[in-house]
Length: 540
Image 1 (cartoon, one colour):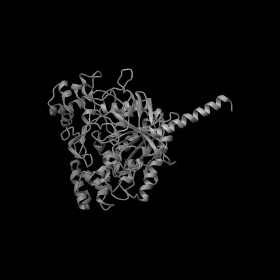
Image 2: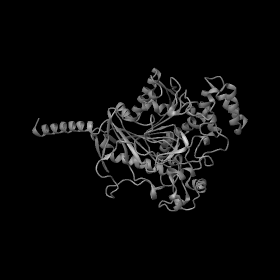
Image 3: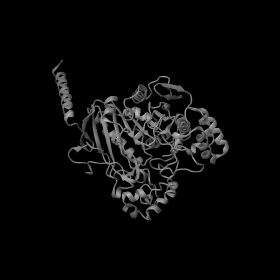
C-alpha cells in the first residue's frame, strides 16, 4: 500500500470514529439553513421540530409557505436545538371539540435516522399524517415514525406538520383577489411540497438518499398524496408512493369552492381582507362551517350515506398546485409516474362507526338500520345491499362495517387503482388488509373497541405500535406486523412487494400471510359503483 492510500485509510477511519463519538454525545447535522442538534435515542438519531418555512402568521396567513433562506437572513444563527417537537398546527382538540390545540406557527418537521453519515444513503420515507385535514400532527403518539422504527428498519424517516382546516385549505374569492396567482386554498398541500423540497436539499446530510424517497400518507394524508401524484410541482420530489386509506374524489374547482365557502365570511362577520387577517386563531376556527354545508366536519363518512348529502371538498383544483382533477390530469399526461402501493382495510370504519350502539345490534337491528339508511336511494338498493352482505355472517358489526367500508373506501380505491394502472407506466400494487387484532383495541384513544381490520391497523403494524394497544402481543399480532413490514420494506427498497406473485394486475389480501385474488369483493363493488355510490366515497 503506498503512502497516499495509507493516509486516506487512516483519515477515513479517524473521521468515522470521530463522527461516532460525536454522535453519541451530541449529534449535529448541517442543513441548508444552519446546523441542527438532535438526540441519540432508541438506537438512532432524532431531530425534532426543525423549521422548514417562515411561520405562516400575520400577513403570511393564507399565503404559500415561505422557505427559510440564508441570503435573506431568515435562518437561525448558531446551532438549532432540534430536541423538542414543534408546535402542532392550530386545531380543535380531537377529544374535546369545544377546546383548541396548537399554534399557527407550526411548519416544523422531524427526522429520525440510523446514521448521520452522508455516505450512508439509506432509503427515505416521508410521512404525511391523516386527520381529515383538520387535526393531528407529525408526531402523534402511536401514529407516526420514531427513532425505534428507524433503528429497526434501517430507514430514514421524515414527517412534517402542515396547515389544517381553514388555515390550510380555505378558498375564498376575497383572498384570491389579492393573491399574485389569482386563487386561494391548498396551502396545506403547498406546505407538504415545500417539506419534500427540504428533503431533497437536506436529507443526504442525515444519511438518506434523496433519489430513493418513498412518500406515504394515511387517510387524508393519502388524499394529499393523490393530489401530489397529479401536480406539475412534484416531479422528482419522490420516487415511490404508499397511499393508505385515501380518498379518491378530488374534482372541486376554485370557483365552486369560493361559492361554497361564502358561509365562512358570514360566520366570521368579515367582508374584506383586513378583517380576515385580524381574526384570532379561535375566530377563524369557529368560522368554519363544521355542521352546515359544505360540512367540513364530515361526521357522516363513517356511516351509510343519505341520498343527496355530500360533504364539501377541502382540497381543490386551484390552477396552481392542481391544474385539473387528478384523473383528468393523468389522462392528459400530468403524472408523477412512480411505483404506487394502494391499501385499504376490510372494516375501515370499525374504529368509530356512525351507529354508537353497533356492538349491541342483533340481525334484526342490522336489517332495520340498513333499510332505513339506504331507503333514501330506493327499496331495490336495500334489497341488493342486504343480499350482498347477508345476515348470519360473523356478526352484525362485521357485516355493517364491511358494507360501509366497501361503499366509502374499498370499492372507490379499486377505481383509483384501475385508473392509475391505466395511465401510469410504473406498476401500481393494490392490497386490502384482512387481519384482525387478537383482542379489541381503542385506536388513538377512540371510545369504540375495534375488533376487526380497522382504519390504521396496517399502519400500526408498520410503525410497530401494536404493543401500545395489546400487551403482551399474540403470535398472530406479531406475524401480522412482520408481514406488513416485509411487504412494505421490499417495496421501499425495490419498488416491488416481497411476495413474488403479487404483481400489478392483482389484489393482495394482506394478513399474517399474503394471499392473492383477482379482485376484492367483485360483486359488491360492481353494485356500488354501477349504482352511482362512488360519489359518496370518502372525501378529504
